[in-house]
Length: 74
Image (tube, rainbow, N blue to C red):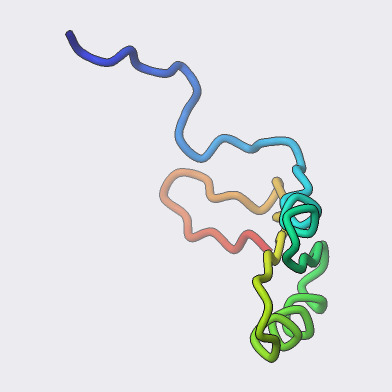
């Protein structure tokens, strides 16, 4: 029997979820990135560490690609 098809399109915007806090609750480290300028420092902290990290990068929903265009989401 074929699998049921979802009516939700691929790449649907989801509400902001604090995955960074979920990783911290499990003993790792997390950072919430909401601005492009925050991404570099967050990557440096994560890559310079021996700990498990989750960089939770919130994307601008208005920046998603329209059909036939290139997308820049952050």
